[in-house]
Length: 281
Image 1: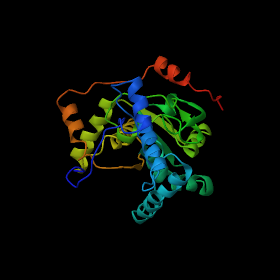
Image 2 (image 1 turned 90 degrees about the vertical axis):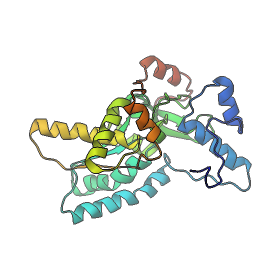
Image 3 (image 1 turned 90 degrees about the horizontal axis):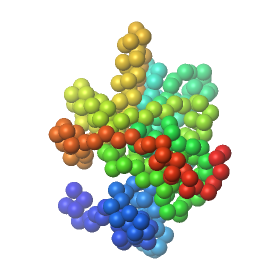
């Protein structure tokens, strides 16, 4: 579609930036990651007078900007005469999760509500559930400021799973602190489980969800089954971050049995974290 409207698309890492060339020199078959793409984007913006870089996640002001989503959701819930007991949102750098959950967390902190907010991430890129809390860079090459975050290490390159922006090594500073203080929760899911949840959602709601959105749906399904087992009724709000019509090839791979399950090993995480020079916070 981008080519149709005249854009030139280069898969990251490219040979058009110093950052990309550095990555490719180390691994010519690099599957890329959000952290690598950020390094290339920042370099492009910093070295061109006609280019600006607009952040989409991770940093505090971006997360707070995204909370218009949650503020609108509160209004929608009020009109429906209900309020969620549980909120599930996909988690990459934090914008989707923060956008929907932060306004509801305010209700917890200021009005005594007890709304559980769960961040859903891939088992192959589990910074919240298996990472460490320490200062790290927001990009792979190390062009951004150091941020206090849950991280797998900025050198960590996730497996080439279908998870969109969830293939990111770190978590936003505010979200990381909230998790550290046990104000929010985190859950990881395997790729097959997520696509299964996505298919269920498509058959139920008529919308094919983006692969990253299926992580939140998988958490929602898990929580709904727990409610059924316990014989309780709860309202679950799932943040559908996008449709999957740009990712139909991923669904084709799943339905044709060509997807492989992947979970990062303890050794892989430890090897990546060993490269960090910053202390654990």
